Length: 449
Image (cartoon, rainbow, N blue to C red; front, side, top):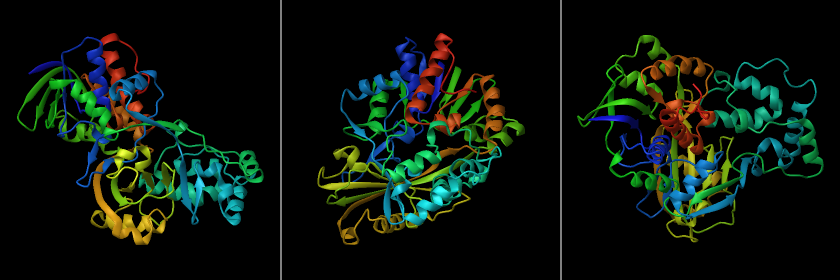
């Protein structure tokens, strides 16, 4: 079968591309999805007890009017809007997020250590060469020791000295001494920083509801359970595990870029394969714990830099929508995320037990509530986050032009391998902008090769 536009992956990027092609009147396209469901890393699942779980703590916020309209159309108004309430668990207390702007909540000796590290002459002044040095330069030794270094290792499962820092942009709130001292002396909190301080969430079905609806509206142009196993870049042919073969004029690949080069493209040279091996990632174990009973807690999500828990982030998923819980208003859904890698190995078969211990240690679950756990659910995601390592950009500069010269465009969280443009809105818009490039000749602005 021949199609003009072949899209591999029915996640946010692939579905965004397909939707935009159809909007622009182009019907000669097909989406191939290896899973039996659409949504990719933005899929949601309902467990046997009636709890709904996402693959991690997704929230819907946007940099784009197009994405906002897409969400409103897809959900037909069936969403909730929240003001972000986020906190950091440290030193047996809760500190409002961002941590570095609210250190007045720390014990006084920790406050002083953080302030002292920000004083003139205390921070390195040389141009940083990696993420670790950037943290020291921007935040000083105190904030680095208590929060930035342990938390980032728990998230990335990668030593900070192996990572670049130019990806940061709006991802990390930077700091200045005057603001820190003012907040301490005047007892001020600064909690509104960041693009996700207001977010939306589907009323029913979790984040995956958005992409289920998008895929369903595309009908038979989305083929589920159709995994691509081989790509002939010269003849523009794709071979699938079920034996089907497709030819194409242009291909959008939204799966992991390293796997595309190492396992699928048959003409990849050793230079390309070496570049693909430079791309690093973490893996993430998502644990859902459904509990009978409520607590007075309006927090949306929490961060955990200390070793009192294995998880780096916990979401009060019942606060996103009461329908995420099996008994709305009477049960709560706690969703924890723990990363792993070769730098930070984890025993997956014990992580649920460790997660429950961590919930008790951090006061999110009372010890006597262990007998009131209604459900435990988990998913181990091999590709969690693309890690912005020092060698990433050079690898992408080798891989992407070679692919594009053969009409293969690799986009999305792991297709583009750029964490800084890997939010849900970024991912959808990478697909949308690719479609507009194909049909209208417009320049892509979210993802730049």
